[in-house]
Length: 300
Image (cartoon, rainbow, N blue to C red; front, side, top):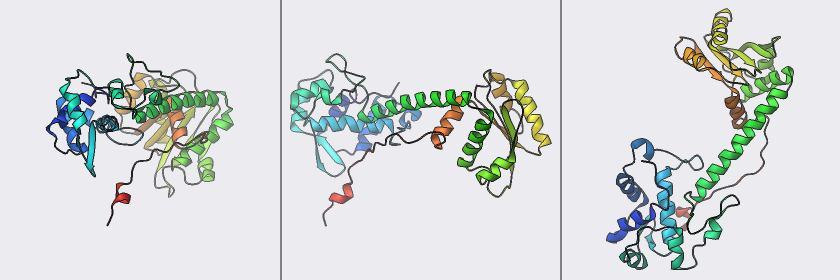
Protein backbone atom coordinates (compact mmCIF):
# COMPACT_ATOMS: atom_id res chain seq x y z
CA UNK A 1 0.00 0.00 0.00
CA UNK A 2 1.02 3.64 -0.30
CA UNK A 3 2.86 5.39 2.53
CA UNK A 4 0.15 6.89 4.80
CA UNK A 5 0.01 10.67 5.18
CA UNK A 6 0.92 12.23 8.52
CA UNK A 7 -2.70 12.73 9.64
CA UNK A 8 -3.58 9.10 8.96
CA UNK A 9 -0.69 8.18 11.25
CA UNK A 10 -1.90 10.24 14.22
CA UNK A 11 -4.45 7.80 15.66
CA UNK A 12 -2.32 4.64 15.16
CA UNK A 13 0.63 6.47 16.74
CA UNK A 14 -1.37 7.56 19.78
CA UNK A 15 -2.77 4.03 20.18
CA UNK A 16 0.77 2.66 20.02
CA UNK A 17 1.71 4.98 22.89
CA UNK A 18 -1.29 3.90 24.97
CA UNK A 19 0.88 1.56 27.07
CA UNK A 20 2.48 4.72 28.55
CA UNK A 21 5.98 3.54 27.69
CA UNK A 22 8.65 5.91 26.43
CA UNK A 23 9.40 5.43 22.73
CA UNK A 24 12.08 6.55 20.31
CA UNK A 25 11.07 7.84 16.87
CA UNK A 26 12.80 5.01 15.00
CA UNK A 27 10.98 2.39 17.05
CA UNK A 28 7.50 3.78 16.40
CA UNK A 29 8.31 4.34 12.72
CA UNK A 30 9.30 0.68 12.28
CA UNK A 31 6.23 -0.54 14.20
CA UNK A 32 3.82 1.64 12.21
CA UNK A 33 5.51 0.56 8.96
CA UNK A 34 4.75 -3.04 9.94
CA UNK A 35 1.16 -2.19 10.84
CA UNK A 36 0.57 -0.57 7.45
CA UNK A 37 2.33 -3.41 5.61
CA UNK A 38 4.87 -1.18 3.87
CA UNK A 39 7.28 -2.86 1.49
CA UNK A 40 11.04 -2.51 1.83
CA UNK A 41 11.02 -0.12 -1.12
CA UNK A 42 8.36 2.09 0.52
CA UNK A 43 10.29 2.12 3.80
CA UNK A 44 13.38 3.38 1.96
CA UNK A 45 11.71 6.22 0.02
CA UNK A 46 13.54 9.43 1.00
CA UNK A 47 12.59 13.11 0.89
CA UNK A 48 14.40 15.17 -1.73
CA UNK A 49 14.41 18.13 0.68
CA UNK A 50 16.00 16.56 3.77
CA UNK A 51 17.10 13.12 2.60
CA UNK A 52 15.16 11.72 5.54
CA UNK A 53 12.90 8.69 5.07
CA UNK A 54 9.37 9.75 4.06
CA UNK A 55 7.71 7.36 6.54
CA UNK A 56 10.01 8.55 9.33
CA UNK A 57 9.35 12.18 8.42
CA UNK A 58 5.57 11.78 8.35
CA UNK A 59 5.59 9.91 11.67
CA UNK A 60 7.70 12.68 13.17
CA UNK A 61 5.23 15.33 11.99
CA UNK A 62 2.32 13.30 13.39
CA UNK A 63 4.14 13.26 16.74
CA UNK A 64 4.90 16.98 16.48
CA UNK A 65 1.24 17.94 16.11
CA UNK A 66 0.11 15.51 18.81
CA UNK A 67 2.72 17.05 21.10
CA UNK A 68 1.66 20.59 20.18
CA UNK A 69 -1.91 19.67 21.13
CA UNK A 70 -0.69 18.26 24.43
CA UNK A 71 -1.55 14.61 23.71
CA UNK A 72 2.10 13.59 23.67
CA UNK A 73 4.89 14.69 25.98
CA UNK A 74 8.66 14.42 25.74
CA UNK A 75 10.11 13.59 29.19
CA UNK A 76 13.70 13.27 28.01
CA UNK A 77 15.89 13.77 24.97
CA UNK A 78 14.96 11.52 22.03
CA UNK A 79 12.04 9.84 23.83
CA UNK A 80 8.33 10.61 24.03
CA UNK A 81 5.17 9.09 25.48
CA UNK A 82 1.44 9.64 25.70
CA UNK A 83 0.26 12.34 28.11
CA UNK A 84 -2.71 12.07 30.45
CA UNK A 85 -4.63 14.34 28.08
CA UNK A 86 -3.75 11.99 25.21
CA UNK A 87 -4.84 8.95 27.21
CA UNK A 88 -8.20 10.59 27.95
CA UNK A 89 -8.59 11.47 24.27
CA UNK A 90 -8.16 7.80 23.35
CA UNK A 91 -10.84 6.79 25.86
CA UNK A 92 -13.38 8.74 23.78
CA UNK A 93 -12.68 6.14 21.03
CA UNK A 94 -12.14 8.57 18.13
CA UNK A 95 -12.48 7.05 14.65
CA UNK A 96 -9.71 9.35 13.39
CA UNK A 97 -7.36 12.03 14.66
CA UNK A 98 -6.45 14.89 12.36
CA UNK A 99 -5.61 18.59 12.60
CA UNK A 100 -9.29 19.56 12.91
CA UNK A 101 -9.74 17.08 15.77
CA UNK A 102 -6.68 18.47 17.56
CA UNK A 103 -7.96 22.06 17.48
CA UNK A 104 -10.22 21.29 20.46
CA UNK A 105 -7.16 20.90 22.70
CA UNK A 106 -6.16 24.56 22.77
CA UNK A 107 -4.74 27.26 20.55
CA UNK A 108 -1.46 25.48 19.83
CA UNK A 109 -2.86 24.52 16.42
CA UNK A 110 -4.40 26.71 13.78
CA UNK A 111 -5.38 25.43 10.34
CA UNK A 112 -5.07 28.94 8.91
CA UNK A 113 -1.34 28.80 9.60
CA UNK A 114 -1.19 25.62 7.56
CA UNK A 115 -3.00 27.00 4.50
CA UNK A 116 -1.00 27.99 1.44
CA UNK A 117 -1.76 30.41 -1.36
CA UNK A 118 -2.76 27.48 -3.57
CA UNK A 119 -4.66 25.38 -1.01
CA UNK A 120 -7.33 26.46 1.44
CA UNK A 121 -8.53 23.88 3.91
CA UNK A 122 -11.98 23.33 5.41
CA UNK A 123 -13.21 20.80 7.94
CA UNK A 124 -13.95 18.46 5.04
CA UNK A 125 -10.69 19.11 3.18
CA UNK A 126 -7.58 18.79 5.32
CA UNK A 127 -3.93 18.87 4.23
CA UNK A 128 -2.30 15.52 3.58
CA UNK A 129 1.23 16.84 3.07
CA UNK A 130 3.65 17.79 5.80
CA UNK A 131 5.12 21.32 5.66
CA UNK A 132 8.35 19.81 4.29
CA UNK A 133 6.43 17.96 1.57
CA UNK A 134 4.64 21.17 0.58
CA UNK A 135 8.06 22.76 0.03
CA UNK A 136 9.19 19.72 -1.95
CA UNK A 137 6.12 19.65 -4.22
CA UNK A 138 6.34 23.40 -4.80
CA UNK A 139 10.02 23.12 -5.70
CA UNK A 140 9.21 20.39 -8.22
CA UNK A 141 6.65 22.60 -9.95
CA UNK A 142 9.09 25.52 -10.10
CA UNK A 143 11.86 23.27 -11.45
CA UNK A 144 9.57 21.77 -14.11
CA UNK A 145 8.53 25.20 -15.35
CA UNK A 146 12.16 26.36 -15.38
CA UNK A 147 13.29 23.31 -17.37
CA UNK A 148 10.57 23.93 -19.96
CA UNK A 149 11.61 27.56 -20.34
CA UNK A 150 15.29 26.60 -20.67
CA UNK A 151 14.49 24.14 -23.46
CA UNK A 152 12.39 26.73 -25.27
CA UNK A 153 15.28 29.21 -25.11
CA UNK A 154 17.79 26.61 -26.37
CA UNK A 155 15.64 25.85 -29.42
CA UNK A 156 15.58 29.54 -30.28
CA UNK A 157 19.32 30.15 -29.95
CA UNK A 158 21.91 30.14 -32.74
CA UNK A 159 24.14 27.11 -33.53
CA UNK A 160 27.18 29.01 -32.22
CA UNK A 161 25.46 29.75 -28.93
CA UNK A 162 24.30 26.12 -28.68
CA UNK A 163 27.88 24.94 -29.15
CA UNK A 164 29.07 27.24 -26.39
CA UNK A 165 26.26 26.07 -24.11
CA UNK A 166 27.16 22.39 -24.56
CA UNK A 167 30.86 23.06 -23.94
CA UNK A 168 30.03 25.06 -20.82
CA UNK A 169 27.84 22.27 -19.47
CA UNK A 170 30.40 19.55 -20.13
CA UNK A 171 33.14 21.52 -18.41
CA UNK A 172 30.88 22.19 -15.41
CA UNK A 173 30.26 18.44 -15.24
CA UNK A 174 34.01 17.80 -15.12
CA UNK A 175 34.74 16.84 -18.73
CA UNK A 176 37.24 18.30 -21.16
CA UNK A 177 39.64 19.95 -18.73
CA UNK A 178 39.48 23.74 -19.20
CA UNK A 179 36.82 25.48 -21.24
CA UNK A 180 39.43 26.44 -23.83
CA UNK A 181 40.62 22.83 -24.19
CA UNK A 182 37.06 21.58 -24.46
CA UNK A 183 36.23 24.19 -27.09
CA UNK A 184 39.21 23.13 -29.23
CA UNK A 185 38.17 19.49 -28.96
CA UNK A 186 34.74 20.11 -30.45
CA UNK A 187 34.20 21.04 -34.08
CA UNK A 188 31.03 22.53 -35.55
CA UNK A 189 29.14 20.65 -38.23
CA UNK A 190 26.86 22.08 -40.87
CA UNK A 191 23.49 20.75 -39.69
CA UNK A 192 22.80 23.02 -36.73
CA UNK A 193 24.57 20.59 -34.47
CA UNK A 194 28.08 19.98 -33.20
CA UNK A 195 30.22 16.92 -33.08
CA UNK A 196 33.70 16.10 -31.95
CA UNK A 197 35.80 14.42 -29.32
CA UNK A 198 36.14 15.60 -25.75
CA UNK A 199 38.37 14.34 -22.93
CA UNK A 200 36.64 12.33 -20.24
CA UNK A 201 38.92 13.81 -17.58
CA UNK A 202 41.48 16.57 -17.15
CA UNK A 203 44.38 14.21 -17.88
CA UNK A 204 42.88 13.03 -21.16
CA UNK A 205 43.12 9.35 -20.19
CA UNK A 206 40.07 8.58 -22.29
CA UNK A 207 37.98 10.37 -24.91
CA UNK A 208 34.26 10.62 -25.51
CA UNK A 209 32.72 11.15 -28.92
CA UNK A 210 30.01 13.78 -28.83
CA UNK A 211 27.08 14.78 -31.00
CA UNK A 212 24.62 17.50 -30.04
CA UNK A 213 21.77 18.53 -32.33
CA UNK A 214 18.92 21.03 -31.97
CA UNK A 215 16.29 18.79 -33.50
CA UNK A 216 12.51 19.09 -33.38
CA UNK A 217 11.72 15.53 -34.46
CA UNK A 218 12.56 12.50 -32.35
CA UNK A 219 15.89 10.76 -32.97
CA UNK A 220 15.46 7.19 -34.18
CA UNK A 221 17.61 4.08 -34.15
CA UNK A 222 19.19 4.66 -37.62
CA UNK A 223 20.67 7.98 -36.46
CA UNK A 224 22.08 6.36 -33.32
CA UNK A 225 23.52 3.49 -35.36
CA UNK A 226 25.39 6.03 -37.51
CA UNK A 227 26.64 7.69 -34.36
CA UNK A 228 27.94 4.39 -32.95
CA UNK A 229 29.69 3.71 -36.25
CA UNK A 230 31.41 7.08 -36.01
CA UNK A 231 32.88 6.08 -32.64
CA UNK A 232 35.23 3.68 -34.41
CA UNK A 233 36.56 6.42 -36.68
CA UNK A 234 37.27 8.57 -33.65
CA UNK A 235 38.91 5.69 -31.72
CA UNK A 236 36.35 6.23 -28.98
CA UNK A 237 34.51 3.57 -27.02
CA UNK A 238 32.22 6.02 -25.29
CA UNK A 239 29.77 8.49 -26.72
CA UNK A 240 27.22 11.10 -25.70
CA UNK A 241 24.36 12.04 -28.00
CA UNK A 242 22.51 15.22 -27.02
CA UNK A 243 19.27 16.35 -28.64
CA UNK A 244 16.80 19.08 -27.81
CA UNK A 245 13.95 16.71 -28.71
CA UNK A 246 13.73 13.05 -27.66
CA UNK A 247 14.69 9.50 -28.65
CA UNK A 248 12.47 6.72 -29.93
CA UNK A 249 11.97 3.60 -27.84
CA UNK A 250 13.94 1.62 -30.46
CA UNK A 251 16.91 4.01 -30.16
CA UNK A 252 16.96 3.68 -26.37
CA UNK A 253 16.71 -0.10 -26.58
CA UNK A 254 19.51 -0.24 -29.16
CA UNK A 255 22.10 1.46 -26.94
CA UNK A 256 21.31 -0.96 -24.13
CA UNK A 257 22.41 -3.91 -26.22
CA UNK A 258 25.71 -2.74 -27.71
CA UNK A 259 29.26 -3.00 -26.39
CA UNK A 260 29.97 0.72 -26.71
CA UNK A 261 28.93 2.89 -23.77
CA UNK A 262 26.54 5.46 -25.22
CA UNK A 263 24.59 7.98 -23.16
CA UNK A 264 21.49 9.58 -24.66
CA UNK A 265 20.54 13.02 -23.36
CA UNK A 266 17.15 14.32 -24.49
CA UNK A 267 15.87 17.87 -24.14
CA UNK A 268 14.32 17.35 -20.71
CA UNK A 269 17.51 15.83 -19.28
CA UNK A 270 19.65 18.53 -20.90
CA UNK A 271 17.58 21.26 -19.24
CA UNK A 272 17.75 19.54 -15.85
CA UNK A 273 21.52 19.07 -16.13
CA UNK A 274 21.83 22.79 -16.82
CA UNK A 275 19.82 23.50 -13.66
CA UNK A 276 21.91 21.09 -11.58
CA UNK A 277 25.20 22.59 -12.79
CA UNK A 278 24.08 26.24 -12.85
CA UNK A 279 24.38 26.77 -16.59
CA UNK A 280 22.04 29.45 -17.92
CA UNK A 281 20.29 29.86 -14.56
CA UNK A 282 20.81 32.07 -11.51
CA UNK A 283 19.75 31.72 -7.90
CA UNK A 284 16.45 33.47 -7.23
CA UNK A 285 15.91 32.63 -3.56
CA UNK A 286 17.16 30.31 -0.84
CA UNK A 287 15.07 28.90 1.99
CA UNK A 288 16.81 27.17 4.88
CA UNK A 289 15.18 24.41 6.91
CA UNK A 290 16.75 24.16 10.33
CA UNK A 291 16.37 21.61 13.11
CA UNK A 292 17.16 21.69 16.80
CA UNK A 293 20.76 21.07 17.85
CA UNK A 294 20.19 18.73 20.80
CA UNK A 295 23.86 18.74 21.79
CA UNK A 296 23.73 22.51 22.37
CA UNK A 297 21.23 22.09 25.20
CA UNK A 298 23.20 19.41 27.09
CA UNK A 299 24.41 20.71 30.42
CA UNK A 300 27.58 19.41 32.06
